[in-house]
Amino acid sequence: MVREGFRGELERADDSIVAGRAMDGDVAAFAVLVRRYTPMMRAYTQRMLNASAEVDDIVQEAFVTAWQRLPEIEEPARVKSWLMRIVSRKAVDRIRARRPVVDIDEIDQAAPESASPARRAETRAGIAALGAVLGELPDAQRECWVLREIGGYSYDEIAEELGVPTATARGLLARARKYMIVRMEEWR
Image 1 (cartoon, rainbow, N blue to C red):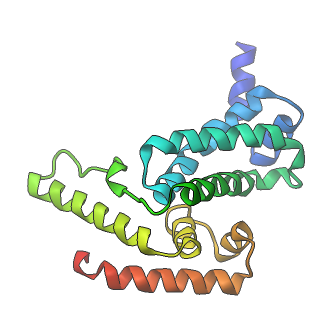
Image 2 (image 1 turned 90 degrees about the vertical axis):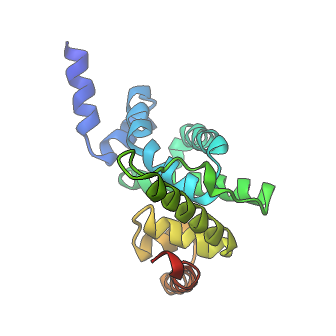
């Protein structure tokens, strides 16, 4: 009973505490980070790769790398961006290894079952079109778009993630958005 109370406290603790404990070798604390950030890392990786068969592998590889490199965290409170940077690099490495195939059809985001068959088909076609357009973007622009629109990152966080000035991140995102708007016009 005491152990469950401790686990609940750890689940509710902020990132700096959980990451700090994980850095000290606390496997339960690292498991909290895995539970806390796996959904976001999966969503990011799905948008980057558009291939569900590889998403879980990349996220798992990212967590293995994170566990091995925990002592390198300079600011435990920033563990979220640190984990996202790791998974981002793993995803980019995978993209570079298998270029140029991008297939958004693998993403499991079907229309609600209550929707008509025509609406479901339209939703699937829209997702496929989005995946095709994302695949046309240069890597840096696609990363910026995914980090902002899927990950909810700020411009400063995107800049830090990509290792570029904030102005460059803004420019990349602006170009990506402009391209996406033009190419997705028929889906508005």
